[in-house]
Length: 226
Image (cartoon, rainbow, N blue to C red):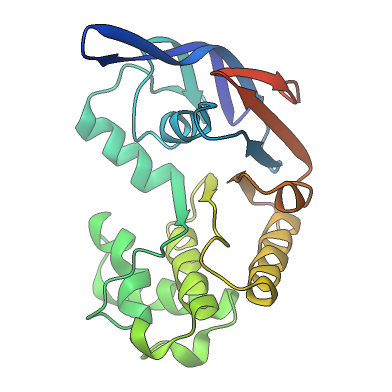
């Protein structure tokens, strides 16, 4: 059974008096343990697809099942709970809180999940160890390099043990050598069994994945079948 299963998904936005269809009859299945890259030019629909897969938005029509749970028609509070439980996000701009140290940033999803302080601290420290930053736990973001900040963001994404790691242009703010280090970390996480969806416009990044899904004008034109 697929971890991600979209069937006939449409997404339409109102732009003044006009209706703009960002996604048009998109069907996509991604299995547990897959590493999939989503590619497309600006306006192709890849950001809209990422938002729906990440439960940041809901489709206008169609079905989306995540980990065998229908989420397409969920209310906002229910979607927020699914995001916190099922999805770890890695963004281009890190989104770290500047006044919190690395371990404090990594703990945040566990705080929202209601875990106690001792368990939060143990799991956050283990997540930092997993990305090679156990010795930087007490450093604030401005004391870390770009690559280290992204590793903190990846540790934060992993700390809740999500079903899905969703990465949006994760090397976009990094130099090429540091970007390669982050991609190597993703490859290692995939080998460990994590399901990863990488959204990118860079062909050489997409080739690191096991499958490339290409979008054009809101439709999947290649790679939709597992």
